[in-house]
Length: 345
Image (cartoon, rainbow, N blue to C red):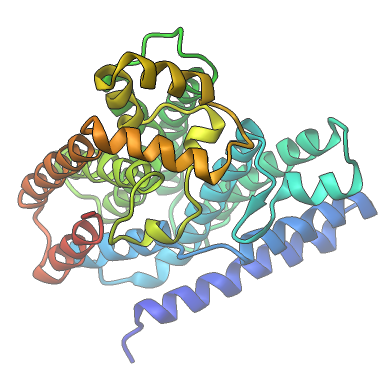
């Protein structure tokens, strides 16, 4: 019987659970076991497993015939994703993820008003990255050469993501650092596109030994698609839309003091008094929804919503152009076309 996407997801969930149960059995202290139990609760509470699914989609789209080899690589991608999220939550000082406590949140319950939660979350993220690498190294059928190749792709991705995180942190902390449209797009490409789209697709390309030219085409599509993804996410933080992002809590970026494209446009195009008010309120973590609606009104009135829509439309068209270069089968092209369709506001 041919295995489906749902079969893959079920097997992935079971393998993730096994990873944590095995590690808990090896834990040398009660404290280590508790951390692993909390990591398991967080990861198994997580969302769509979109990166392992993109790995599978890409592999099948290029005619892959041995999908069983994808499971451990999919586990690695999911654990790598969760590692980055845990560290991202530390940087943003967020305590909630997937409608429940994240690692910071778990340990703040135990140690309020302490630096211990950040330290424990840092350790938890490091463990997730270690487990991701172990999933590749312990793969039962891949050659050592192929394992090293996959780890090289992950390591190269990490460097780019961390470069993007640096830009994002500097963006978060001060308006004194010059922030341009090009700066934001580069941040989006490094911080989001590289690991959300390019990494799973390049891992599939490596498993299939695709030629260098096709990998370059994948890279072009992935960078455009991943940047589009982040632009839509940033848009949805302020404005109503038709994507899955619309269900997310709004106004998080502004309250954290983060400049994304809608706000950048407004700061350059709105009246002086409104710009000064925006700058004064930016980063106010307890800014009321009433005041946030004033922010949105300013953005709408100065054309930031329309400009953001155009930016999204331009990247959607760019991603579609690169999609047409990919030598995938029709089912694969259709799946990626549906992904792009889901990113129209």
